[in-house]
Amino acid sequence: MASGPFIHRFTRDLRLEDNAGLAAAAARGDVLPVLVIDERLVERLRASPRRAAFYCAAVRALDTELGARGSRLLVRRGPAARVVAEVARATGAAGASWSVAYDGVEAQSDRAAQSALEERGLAALLVHDAPAVAPEESAAARSVAGLGYRAFAPYFEAWRELPIVSYELPLWLRLREAPIASEPLPEPAEFGSDQAERCDPASARTLLERFLRDGASRYAWAARVPSAEATSRLSAHLSFGTISARTLCRVVRERMADPFSIAEERVSLRAFLRALARRDFFLQLAWFHPETSERALQERMREFVWERSHPALEAWCQGRTGYPLVDAGLRQLRATGWMHPHVRAVAASFLCFDLGVDWRVGRSVWDRWLIEDDPALATGNWQWIAGVGADMAQYPRIYNPERQRRSSDPSGDYVREWVPELRHVPLDEWFARTSASPQLGLDLFGEDAYPPAVVDHEQAASAFLNRYRAFASP
Ligand SMILES: Cc1cc2nc3c(=O)[nH]c(=O)nc-3n(C[C@H](O)[C@H](O)[C@H](O)COP(=O)(O)OP(=O)(O)OC[C@H]3O[C@@H](n4cnc5c(N)ncnc54)[C@H](O)[C@@H]3O)c2cc1C
Image (cartoon, rainbow, N blue to C red; front, side, top):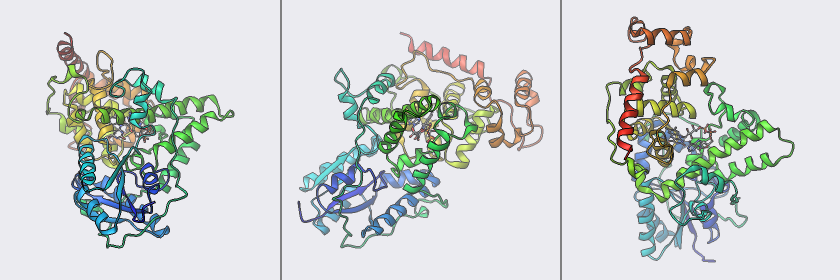
């Protein structure tokens, strides 16, 4: 084993447990923990003040955990390749490991940093840590050679049979403290944020335990019913790596294998595993098709012309479209940095089909409020909804926002929580009346009153579908 340390550069893997990159570094020598704040990270954190606060809290927690083990994070600001090379020179490190990014821009800079370090004679170990199953592993399970999977159903069939590797804290992990000074830990204000968020591996664990205790048997239902509040709420933790997807999958698989678990819970946990598999699916899609960060996966849809704007775009952003479920979702996102998964699908469908606005516009609007920092997942989902991505259905699934409200929020609790203007209104009756006579929904009581529907859903959706059909049919 070399006498110098080996650098582990923490990226979106802000934990010690079950960390593939850290295990790779530990196998090479004493580990020097480094955090690089480069231009792309600054851009991602500046985009969303809550995201910045969440990230800074996770970094602080990691530093404290390292402190308890006799080490500290060595923080540096600047381009990753330059920073890592400088630290290696100053400390005698033989190289660095880090977990790869799946977003096209960052993946490219990962590769550039790897080449730059190798040219200087340093080892650069790029490791898959974010997915439970690495893209190359699932691709190897395919009977046909090629760039991974483009359709989810066969991917899931293969994924569910694959083993999930574990990188529990290696016994031989020895951490070193850098002999050179660190720059200060990142603070939210550095990224223009005045928010405060709690984020550390312990809070991720607590969410997981709460989910297993209260949500596990209800998940299949709760994933469609926002007022149930029983999805895991782990997406932001997964995106910054304060919990690993492998740990989650293993825990869930073990629970499913328990012969005493009830059938309802097994069905629900299977749906949850499917959600985690979908995450891996979109990560491998971005890995093998980096160009899809800006271009449709489906070649036939690449030239389809979307609107970049619409008179009702601002109403959609503000949660004032006159469609209560869509509006509740947008308001939940703006207030909390998170939106229920099914409501995301309905709200995104509304933007793409009722307003005909480009999925890339919707993605960037949400990026300003989401805590999650997962461009690859945002892209995969937005393309899926817009009917230009991995969903192989012949025509896009256009959600009827009012029908969806009735089926997924029958009690009206979710809408009433986020749209206080409708708190005392019998929703079914109200919508039937306002859609028959739009003037009844007019803003009679000033800016605070709930607005009438900005478009007629049936007309807008059928006009869009005609345009889509004319374009997509040969
Ligand atoms: C238009 C649209 C945009 C989205 N943008 C993002 C995004 O930017 N970042 C993001 O993490 N998720 C995104 N999703 C996926 C999904 O809505 C969120 O992951 C989910 O709402 C997170 O809540 P949860 O942690 O309670 O999820 P749970 O339902 O508890 O699921 C557990 C985990 O599985 C993963 N997961 C679940 N559904 C999906 C999915 N459809 N695609 C990928 N992973 C999934 C997430 O990591 C999630 O935390 C988007 C979905 C849509 C329809």
